[in-house]
Each structure stands twice: as structure tokens, then as C-alpha cells.
Length: 360
Image (cartoon, rainbow, N blue to C red; front, side, top):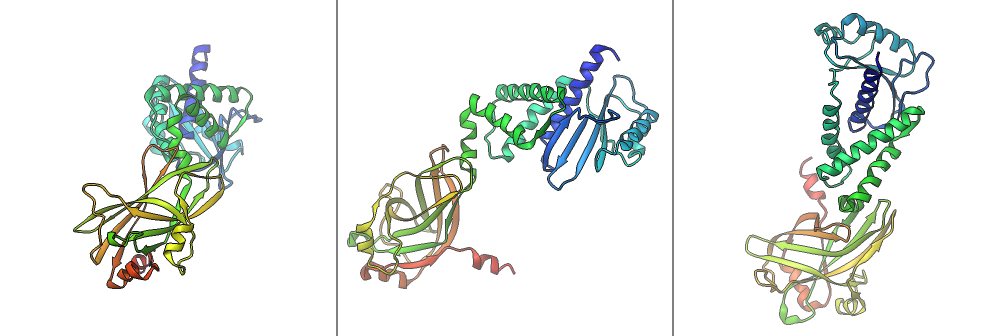
């Protein structure tokens, strides 16, 4: 094999490894290009989360690859005893009998790939977006995807020279560091992807000014940050609507979570709502008082009794738009109107348990 063919073959091998790295069908934990082996038959060695391994050999040729060669290569690869599973990866034209009769000696022979390195690069540039979307990273501009792929290829070639075992975390780190440096807004969604807002109860309260007659709402909220970066909550928004009216509620105060006490006292002891941070691997609990938004197109007076839809939104500092947290249904009965004069609150559950029980 001439030098040019050898370089092309190694480039095809590296690009095939890169394409498989973007495949989410199996959770690989480590990969080694050109691992050290006694018989030099394994080109790529994969390790998976369940403890299994897969050894791959890559063969490429611009001439047709015949069945006899494939059978011999599969026998040699299986004899290496390098893994639990084996694959012979072919690039270039092959005889029909290869795919018709595969596998050979327990070695899988997938559909061959192209020998055109530019075509393989284009596949990788397309595939990287799907991989990143699965990690809650916004789609990237084409020039950035191209530069990322070329950087990954260079890093993988460097690792192959020394037969270096590459961990999945290291691979993801290369991607994220490149994105963060060139296009930081793409990771904004990822910074809040591991944040969850827990909400299960609405407290219905009377308004501070009795003549307004519109309920005030207290939501005990817990924000859990399971990510590796500090998250900042800028605001919450509550949408409430029925067949006859549309309402918006904004956060005004953080009040003590003491449903049995006079609501006016809790309101007075509260503090104005503002931005708050949640450190990694921690949570913050707040009982947030919501008041109706006074704006054209939205009702801000007494609610008629009946069924209402309620949807809670959150705005993180690292994310440009509001995110819907939960949508649920509540029913306002005559009993709820007692809060307008009693000075106490009434609690309504927003758990979806009843909905799930109805499916059993």
C-alpha cells in the first residue's frame, strides 16, 4: 500500500470512529484508536457502560472487496480475543456476497461506508447537531460545526498516535470547551437543563386591597439544581385561564410558608421577590406570592367559580426565554371565596395523581 492510500485509510478509520462516537444507541464510556495488541488486528476498541466491549477492524479499498478477503479478516479479528463483540468495518465497493452471507465467524459486517473523506466529514458535521441536541445544547451555525469536527479529528489523530484511551467525559469536554469559546450562547440551555422546579400546591388568598376582589396566590416552590453550574432564577410567571377569561400573575413577594397564620401578617413579614441563585447540587425553597397583572387584555377582578387551567413558567438568567414548568387544572368552588373576608388561605393541590389514577 502506497503512502497516499495509507493516509486515506487512516483518515477513514478516524472518521468512522468519530461518527460512531456521535451514535447514542449505546452508552460508550471509552474508546481507543490503534490500541496496543499482539497481532495488530484491532483498529478501534470500544468500552460500554454495561461492561461489554467491542473490537473493530477497518478495511478500505478503491477496488472491490471480495468475500474471500472478508472471511479471512473476520477469522483473524475473532482470533484476537480482544473483546466481547467484533465488527469488520468496510469502506469502498464490496461484492454482493459479503452482505448476503455475513456475519462470518461471529463477526458482524455492517453496510460499508464511503471512502470519500469529504463525504464522511459532511456526515459528521450533520450528526454532531443531533448529539448536542440530546445534551440540551442549542443548534450550532454550520461554520462552528465544521470547525468543531476538524478539531475533534485532530485530537483523535493525536490520541491514536499514542494508542491513548479516550474517556467519554474527555470527548464531551473537547466539544463543550470548543463551543463555549466560540459560541457561548449555545450552552445557555444546557446550564439550566438540570434544574427542576417542584410545585404541588396553590394557596388561594384574599387581596391586600379588599375592593379588588381578585385572588392572590401563594406557590411553595422548590428549585433543584442537579447540574455543575450555578443557576440564577430571574422570575416566575403564572398564566391562569378559563373558557371566559385570561389572567396573568407575577411574583411580588416571598412570604413565610405558614398557611395557618393570618395572611396579612405573612404578607407583611415577607420580602420583595428578586433574582436568586441555586448552587450546583443544591436546592432553594421559596413560598412566592403572585398578584394579578394589571394590563389591557387580562382580567384582574373577581374570579367566577368553575374550572381553570394554570401554567407556571420560569426565566433563568442563562436562558433567553421563559420555560414552561407545569400545566394543571384547578376548580374554584364557593368555599374558596371565603378567603376574601376570612383573612386565611385555602390550599388546592395541583398534583397530577388523580389523572394517573384514572388511567389505571
